[in-house]
Structure formats: structure tokens, C-alpha cells
View 1 (cartoon, rainbow, N blue to C red):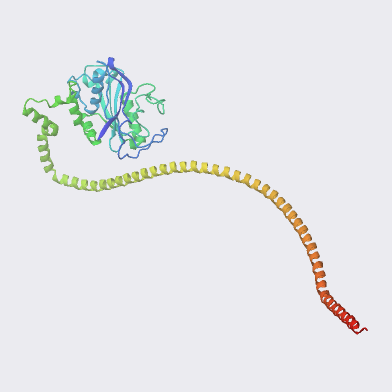
View 2 (spheres, rainbow, N blue to C red; view 1 turned 180 degrees about the vertical axis):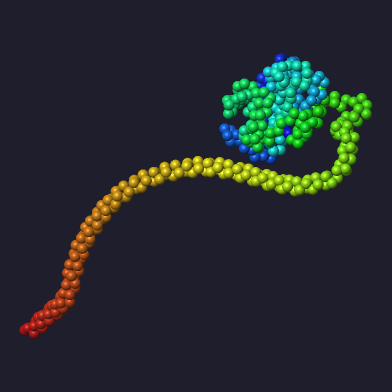
Length: 437
């Protein structure tokens, strides 16, 4: 399913509500698309940020009476429902022809965005007067429809509506159309040339109403839905007016018109006649069947190749997303590592200063330790000398005491001998006294 993303109106509209070059932009305000398809950006376009978003789910256009609201709807429906009988607001066959001047080549381009994948497709209509003269003859009013998938080489902003050499619009929302306006033939040639150089655009040009309706169905834009919209907005009333039927038969007719293509019922006789002709050409049809079977085989291979290509595109998109994620992570990691390297460099510088200060402190401490060791040795030497002198004195005292102890026995014997000698002398005196007369 597609949603209207942008509308571009160029050189079209009545005198009171004319669109010189107007773009109604409804992009980027809805919910994100669930399964975005890979898309190649323009050469000068910035890298996409995040998944694409759906267009606005609803919008309100405020204009005064006569400001151009109905004109806008008429122009949009002229692209999706070609033909004068489908003109919004009545069955006037000349309402769209009144929107063009003699020198105009009017354009109405609609950009639709898929609700699931976000892929875009542009459908548009170009119209002009043949011979550059306004006429009441509808055969002189030329109309054509076209479609393409926007991408590198062509988009809604770079439609070749004018002979311009601009690469891109100068500002957001500004028109990229410069120079003289192209005719319908010039526009078709430019569009076809772009389709040849850029096959991915899938450019399609159509000038017949029925074929254009079939092509819209192939693109996924059902014109039947817009027919209901046209009927609901025929008198600018509400949607309930479409089902305001008076009889059951009217509702039955509405239902049959919704589910049945009147062209098939009108051509029933032609169908029967054609079936009879096909029976008469059975051999030819059998050969055609065989040819079709071979074509189906080849087309099956093409479909398989297309599926392979789609899978490859999915793999490429996933790889691109992973690469961008890795690049963002590497960039963030590089920033963190640069910060860490700066911190480490500062720490290394501080450590070098600390080492230098530690070397100075170590040298100073070594000098202090040597001085302390010298003083300690000096003090130890002085104490040892004092201890040696004291020990020498103790040795002399000990020798003196030892000599004294050695002389004590002789002194004791001398004293004992003296005592005995005294006692003998006393005894002798006593004996002499006793023996004296």
C-alpha cells in the first residue's frame, strides 16, 4: 500500500488559483517504516540518519473560498483517474482545459511512498495545447501520463520541466526549474533519455486512459479507490453521501459497479467471438502455448535471478548497516582511546617527574645514610676504645687481685709461724720465770 508523500504542481491552474511551481511536502512526520528497502542516495545527498519515516497520516489545508482547494483535488484526481468523465466536481468536459494557458505545459506529479518498505514511485501528468493555441476542440488538448521510481538521476525535485543545468536545488523547498519551460515533447525526450541512462528509474510513458489505469494497478495504485474518493468528493460532501441510496437496487448497482469491470460485460460478445477464432487457430495456439511454456521457463529463471538479486541487495543492505554501525563504534572507540592515551601521557610525564624527584631524594638519602654510618662507626670506635681501656683496668685489677691471692698463703703461713714463735717465746719466758730462783 502506498501513501501520498509529495505533490508538485508546475505551470497549471486557473487564473485565481494558479500554481507556478508548488511542492506540498508531507514527508518524514509519520511512524518509521517497518522494513526499509535499501536505496542509493544522490551524489550530493547526506548520509541517511535512521530509518525512513512515513508521510503525514493526515493534513489540513486552510484556504479561503476560491483559494484553490477544489482545483488541487481536481488536478490530483486527473492523474489517478484520467478522462473527462472522472473530473471531480461534476461532468464538465472542459474544466481541466481551463487550467492551461496557450504557452503552458502543465505538470501534476505525485510521489507515493510504500508503507512497509519506504520505496517511492512518482506518477504524473503532462498536458498542453497543440499548436500553442487555446481551443474549444478537445482533440487539440494533449494529455500524457508517466511514472518512474526516483533515484540517482531523476527525482520529483529534478523533473525536467525546464531547460535547466542546475545540479540540485539551491535550498530546501526551492524550485530547481531554471530556464525556458519545455514542451511536452521536450519533456518526454528528457524523461526517456534519463530512463536510458539510469535503468533503475523504470520510466514509463502512456497516452491512453485504459493502459494508464492498468499501469497504475501494476504499480500498486488501484484507481478504483480514487473513483470512490471522486464520488465522495463530487459535491464536496462527506463519505456517507456515497452510500445514501433510496432503494435496494441502487445499492446492488453500486456493489456490482465496485466488483465488476463494465468493460468486460460490454465486450462479452467480442469474447465469445474471439474464443471461436481461437478454436479455429488451435494449431497456432498450441505452438504459441509451447512458445509460452519456454518463455515461462526463461521468465522463471529471470524471477529466480531477481530473487537472488533481492537477497543480495538485502545482504548488501545488512552489511552496509553493520559497516556503518562498526564505523560509528570504531569512531567512538578511537575517541575514547585518544582520551586514554592523553591521560596516560600525562601520567607518564608525572611519573617521570616523580622518578627525577625520587632520584634526587635517593642521592640525598644516600649521603645522609653515609654520614650517619660514619658517625655511628666513629661513636662505635670511641665506645670500643673506652671499653678496651676499662677492660685493661679490669685486667690489671684482676692480675693484682690474683697476685694478692697468690701471696695470701705465704702471709698466712708467716702469721702462723709468728704466732707459734710468740707462743714459744712466751712459754720460754714462763719456763724461765718458773725456773728462776
